[in-house]
Amino acid sequence: MKRLSSLDFLRGVAVFGMTIFHVFGVSQKLEIPSDITELSPFILILGIIVINFQHWRGFFIMISGVVNTYQMFRAFESGKTRIQILGKQLFSGIILILLGKLLITYFYFYGIIDNWTRSGGWNRDFLTMFFYFDTIESLGFMMILSGLTFFFLSYIPKKNICVIVSFFTLLMLAIVIIIVSPTVHEWVGQIAGVAISSDTELFRSFGYAFDYGISEKTIRIFLNAIGGREAPLFPMWGAFLVGEAISILLLHTNLRKWMLRLVYLPCFLMILWGVYEFIFLFGIENLNPFFHVFPRWYSFLSVGTQAMVIILFLIRIEFNHRINKDRWLRGTKYFRRFGVFALTVYFFQLLEAGPRLLFGVIFGIETEARSQLSVIWTIIMIITNILLWSGLLYASDRWLHGVGSWEWILMVVRNPIKWWKSKRKGLDLHGMLHNVEMIQFLDGKRTEA
Image (spheres, helix red, strand yellow):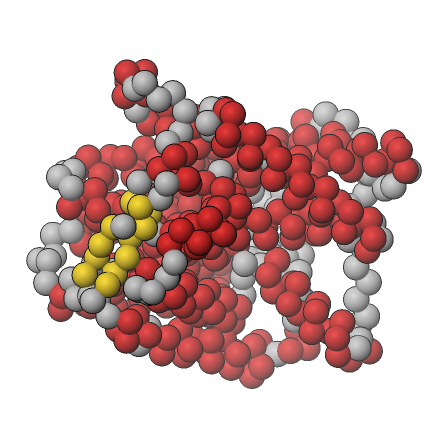
């Protein structure tokens, strides 16, 4: 199967890192002094790095933007019609939105099951988590929006100048999305009667406007999607659009390394913009490192940095004619496996509850309150969860062939007839993971090897 292997690897690393930081976030007891200058330089730098990567959910979204857009145009090149591709995007987006609602209500860290594992009982009040808005739902809406974007962009003549124009159009749209995000959040708050994106506002408290009626509840869903917590379209759609822009650039028929390197310039300018806003407009003294919705300065900082990482890996892997393909694919298989099962790993992050409850019974560690464990126990929890996921994914890969994973379920739901007629009932893990045909861009031409 033809794959952009560097993005498979980065997606796996993103999911692997997410698992570490999720467990860290609900385990480690943090005591941050009011004056951070009291901390040693080492602890301060380490804290900045850890907290920054805890907020890197946009990295997974940006990678998804690159891969999804690239797949749409490749499908178009292979003979699929615009309507077929748009229909698949709409269907996939709706499925992800519904899946996200199931996740956020029951399987999220603050949902009904998590509350039950912490001796909170089966509390039906937590059904209001349904209105929360996190990454899976956000990706669902973005799949729909990217399908519409593709539908119009695909009408542009296949000329390299048009590719460049499309690239800058998507990049500028991404910047606009990020710039207007605070205004959008304020507008949404005015409609809702409460600042629903605020870090200090409980996401269940929406004021009188949402205390009754199906129409209010429907409006509430879309207001959260636009400007609520945790990953609203404003500004997260900006990260996805940057991924789309990078993908569009890969359509250039004579793409060279130096052309990709030029993209570092707008990325660097976004980083500078973010730093400027943080220091001179936002104010260091106002920093709350545990923000939920990204402030504008952090959106620019993270999007610029993440785009540079993606471009760097594309250059080092897909544009490297000297790369040892077998060694690269063999050495990255562990992380690429996490990427293949990204949705399953994300959905079942509450696997964390298993070792937590077991260790609570055996060793008497804290199992009810969040973020109350020592450094040692936090490390033990992280290692245990990574080992569990490594074993489960290996078993699903080698023996179950992906059957039962969310990736497999979505494959069956999208095309049940094709699945039923196929001799292979599981995922094509041979092509996706074990015998990958690397897409490369050598001498300006796209090749598969």
